[in-house]
Image 1: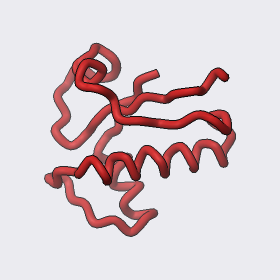
Image 2: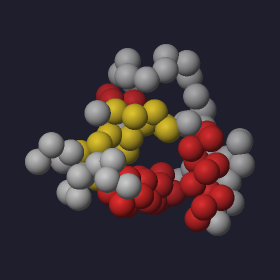
Image 3: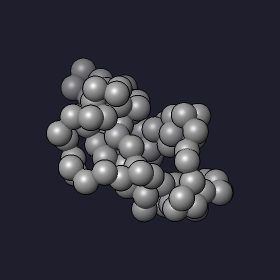
Image 4: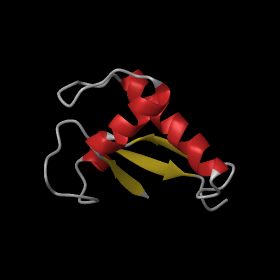
Length: 86
């Protein structure tokens, strides 16, 4: 499944992890991957996703798909949940 990550999700992650980001910040791929890893760990612990499930950044094709909001969000991005049903 594809999930839209909103700026407030990133601000929450930044405050919990001590990362410094602002509303106009461009996130690096490393930061977005770190967010995916953090979210998967958190959701596994909360039993929201299974133990083998992971999040990854959406591909360009998945990014431009119709999932989530159709409104362009400069600071948001999409992630994909993998291995949830294994």
